[in-house]
Length: 588
Ligand code: GTP
Ligand code: SPV
Ligand code: MN
Image (cartoon, rainbow, N blue to C red; front, side, top):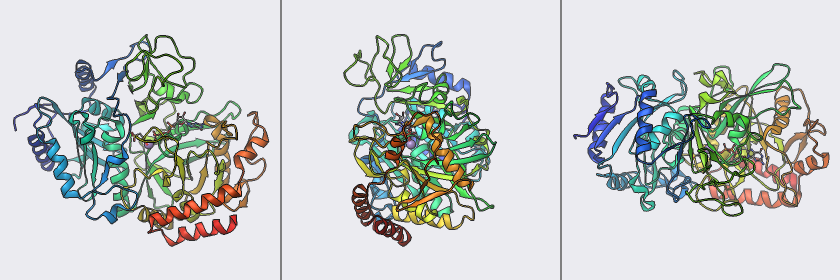
């Protein structure tokens, strides 16, 4: 192997050096660059990306340190059809995953990768998921021939020297291999090998498919490891909320892709709720473990935000707008004539826009920004970042919220009676599909715990792990189900959403602190009249009543569908079937 080397090749880890040499000999890059994560390195890689036409600089005054990337138009989202769980048996992967034989899959993908990096640079990207020193933190090494991936990993993770230091000379690491393969859709695969702690990703350059620390390691392999090691990897934001009396609480919330995690994680309190403060810990992924105090403690394994651009605006999410003001990579948004980015939801369109495919854009036609266009921004840019985001111990969780995007059926908020009932509510969660994954948008599907595309093993076993973890907690978080997306007969949102969601959070926290009563309903506990503060909102009480309404006909068909869902999963914990039976009896 005689590729030219650059970067600090000073890892004394024999297993790491041998594996990199083996993969390089196989993929045959012209150069190998070991990433150290320094600012100088970043400047150099940005210059490489610019020279290759992968990134274009944005206007240095309007978007200092920001870059624009236009992807291949056929490679704009996660592809669940090409995502594989390669366990020894199909049963371990379960009915909701695509299973593939580990040996056959490894051979096939390595076959595609053989010699595929000729003339290219192989980046060795060491990264740390989690704050240094956290008992949950894990090291991954991603080998990639994409400079866009190397640069994005530098934003999204603690990347470079910091990860090699955490690894030491003999630490464990996840082995990730990514090859672009000219983005050939016939060679697109995201394959997970839990038994080997390895990932191979081919034929794509889109975030969730290729930033291997995120959905692949932190969720699919993380969930698999968590079951064995007694912790949980979840598709959850984490926030710290301080109320006007100074009480500080922590909330974790699971909403499916493009259903509001980043927005809730960066929520700005409405003007009519003075004295409230919301600080971000994480916006997409939580790793949680029972603490010695019997509470559930959470860390955010990431170091940046890979967020949905459309809909993000000074009105909906000023914290995100501040976060993406600099040092951000934008992918597949629109471009303005003066070197800035633009997307739907930012207000009136300026003249002279270029769409995400690079064509002049005119109002009334296709969207200017791809609906799944994204920003990758450093966590450090967030003006509302909680100091606890860097705490190796994490934060104790008071409430877990789950919820989907449902135009009907589900009320604005209900509270689970206990952990088991909450696990049931989360296991049957449904949501309309979004542009975050390739395929039809707007079709309701079950997305338990927002983990349908991310749970690395049998869904029934995963629910069992939720129940088992709950049983280890003497002070478990309370569990709530919310739906910000219910519509009226005319198709208008019944609830204003965004910052106003704090009103619902205020009720949730009051419940956790035992300060308000709730009333029983067939589905769980719900706010008493006046329980959700509406002052200054200008929302008619009838609208809130509609948002909270329980329609028996809707619920009869919902519960039949939940029963069919459980039958599809098969191995459903008996306690959850009991909860479904109770709901069915209560609805009548
Ligand atoms: P991933 O990064 O894909 O996991 O998504 P996410 O869950 O972080 O979703 P995000 O917060 O980026 O929101 C996705 C879309 O939903 C954006 O277009 C938001 O503007 C919109 N959205 C977020 N919160 C609300 C809300 O409370 N009400 C309404 N109506 N829309 C919302
Ligand atoms: C999601 O789809 O849930 C995301 C974006 O957070 S991606 O990283 O592409 O998976
Ligand atoms: Mn996500």
